[in-house]
Length: 257
Ligand SMILES: [Zn+2]
Ligand SMILES: [Zn+2]
Image (tube, rainbow, N blue to C red; front, side, top):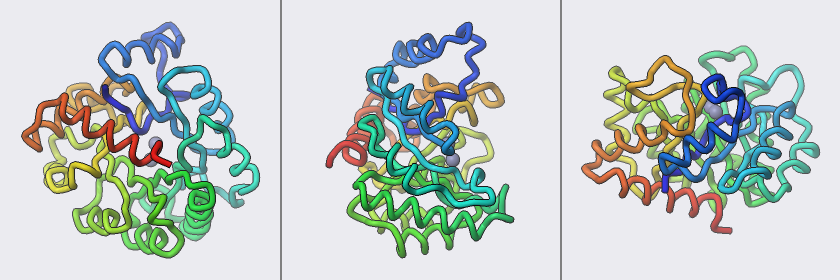
C-alpha cells in the first residue's frame, strides 16, 4: 500500500528491535508500508544495500555516491556500473549537490553528479538526486547531462517552487520527507500543494528526519505513513488515495521500462 521511496535500511537504529532488521521491516509492513527503496551512499555500502534488497520481498536498492561523500577522488564508474547492473538495483544515487554542508568539494560534486547522470541514461535507471543550497547548479547539470526519458527524483525536497517546476519540466518527480510535517516548513507545504499529483513521491530518508510527532527521534520506514497523512491533508485527499497515487508514481518511475 505505502511505498517509502527513500530509506537507508543499512543505517537504521535497530535498538528497539534487538538488532533485527527483519523486525523493523515487519513493523513497517504491519502499517501497510510494503515496499521500500534502500539507498546507497558510497561504494562502501553499495554491496550492503544490494544484499538487503535481495533478501526481502518488496525492497529494491539504488547505488551511487552521496555528494557529501565525494571526497578527493571521483567514483570508479566501472565499479558503479557493475553494481548497478544487479537486478535488485532500480536507480542510480544518491548523487547530486550539497553546498550547505560540503561546499568545499563543489567542483568534484558537480563532476560526480554528471557521471551518475550519464550512467543513469546509459542503463535506463532513474537517478536519485540530493540537492541542498545548490538550486541553479543542480538544474543546469540535469539539463546538460540528464536524460529526460529516464529522469529521476529530487529527494527530500526542501527548495522553492521555482526549482520544483524546473525539475518537473525535465520529467522529474518530487519527493517529500518528514520535513513537510515540521512546524517551520510552511513554505515547503505550499510547494507540496502545487506539485502535480502524478509527480509526487513520499519517503522517510530514515534513519534521519523523523516526521512529527516523532521529530528528534530515530526515523524508520513505518513513519512514511505520517508523511502521507500530511500530504493528504494538504491536498484534501484521503490517506489511502495518497498511498495509491504515490505507489503508482513509484512504479511508473522505477519499474516501467
Ligand atoms: Zn539525501
Ligand atoms: Zn538519503
